[in-house]
Length: 99
Image (spheres, rainbow, N blue to C red):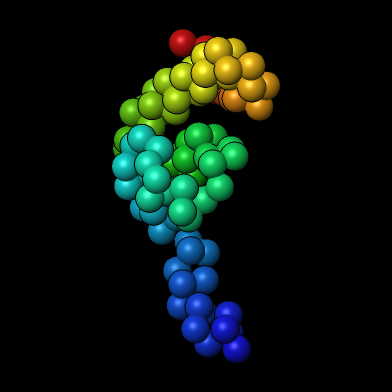
């Protein structure tokens, strides 16, 4: 009942990549508001993939902001000796290249 009746409209709304893009890329930067809707794991890449899929005109800005985010996470991971954060930058570079 809960998903069939209460959330049906929302589920249908987010079947559209355009609507997902509007949600995830409303702000170019990663914000707390976005992480309520999408896991932070993989979010930088997800933002870019969806923007590419719908030809979002802000794609270059999104890509550069996510590159910066991945670089910052990498540096934080090195500083704090947190391996998970050091993985963002190499994955980003493998997917989207270097500057």
